[in-house]
Image (cartoon, rainbow, N blue to C red):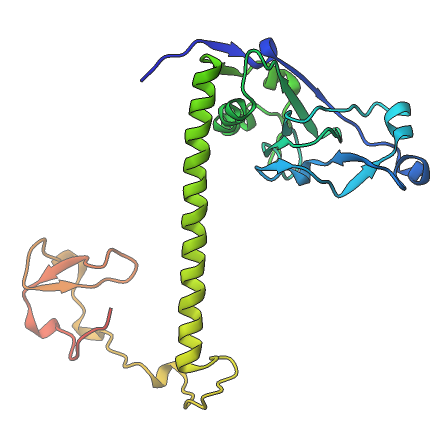
Length: 257
């Protein structure tokens, strides 16, 4: 495995967080706004190009909200989405729950850095403070140690990982389509089981099965053999819990499995 030099995120990136313009100034800070304002709930492991809310130039001028350049990596620092990542596809602002990470273009490729941070998200969350939803501080982000090969190698690694993700996405899509096709074929042949369009006879569960419990013929667990002529199926255990050679313990009819 190739060993790359490492560097702290704070040594080659600028980090920061945003804020929420006062909601009491809706008309001045929000209505008619054209500046994207990203909330942590909008980070969905992709590229953010549009937001649910926009703010005005007055909000940018009069509050502590900051413009973040396109290409920055966004990390949710707390709340239900803590640890979630995205790449900013347009110049935008964020709320206080989002940490922006702006790499030095001469030191790090955005896609590579995104992947490197993504790999460490579980460790980042573990270093947070709090209970079920820990808070991540910018100090933790800045102190992250990232393998940092030269830029061409970073781009090569990022391209490989992007391609692997694309293949996984196609596979998930194919499986979803196959599942949908299977359901469609079932309904085409048998009809919708809820509405019973085919008017199939309806039976209760106990009318469709035969109770073949062992009752008094049950083999005691102490009598299970490691090797024998007949397998023993035991509730709550592996498919075959042991074996017996006693024919009197056999089920009167075959079990479907």
